[in-house]
Length: 318
Image (cartoon, rainbow, N blue to C red; front, side):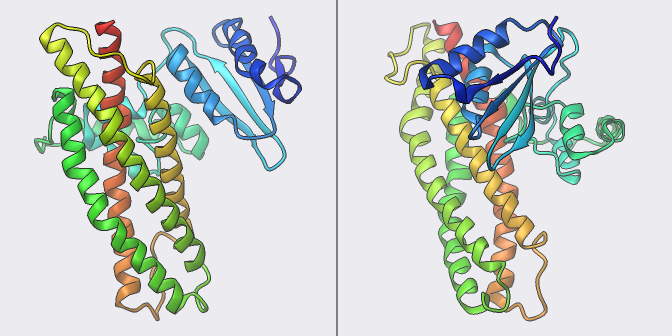
């Protein structure tokens, strides 16, 4: 058996077309509990999504170094029977528990494929304490939350568009306008507003393009899958191959937007207003806070419920 120190693959030494196939071969050779550490000259995040799509949630992805010169990632093969529920799976079953994840800064939407232990380890948190609070949530009176996990997929896709996409389309242009205005008026005294303005612009551009792709391409195909299974007939062949391909792209874009919102929160010191904040300044921070809260549920519904079910449904259709 190779030790972790020995099992290192410098991806930069490989031809581009050989990189991912070589990594997959090395990963498949791992025994349960063993790890492969890859060295690369850029973030290998696309590999994460490809590995997840083609092998499933059977590995742990851990960054050992994140640039600017080297990215080093340890990929460990999970031991059968030891794979606890992920944050996303927990939140999908009981959304009340998402409040506990928010309390501890645990990302249950973009980072929802980590277990509680893995997420707590990354944050330096006591996993036992978090798990105890999750258990206590079971004793709280039920608030009759919307049964997202029980909805037919076409209905869920329409709900996401009519509720969350419409919210983004209505509010994000105003947030961008206020970010521009507040940076222009207060940026000289509060330089953190300048990177916030840039990040808001990036979120705006990404989300507006992202929602079009979902509404015009991915969601119609998911609805067709759902209709096909109900009508007992195969769906039309998709030009993008399997649904896993656009799902991977959407999840990568979700992660980018989520990271931008996290940076905005850091620059604003958790939306703490300075003493000289005007009404527009206050409104900007309030709208950003509300937007992030909606975004978490928005991405959760897609990453943790809609997309996994669509992938399984397509497999059944085929």
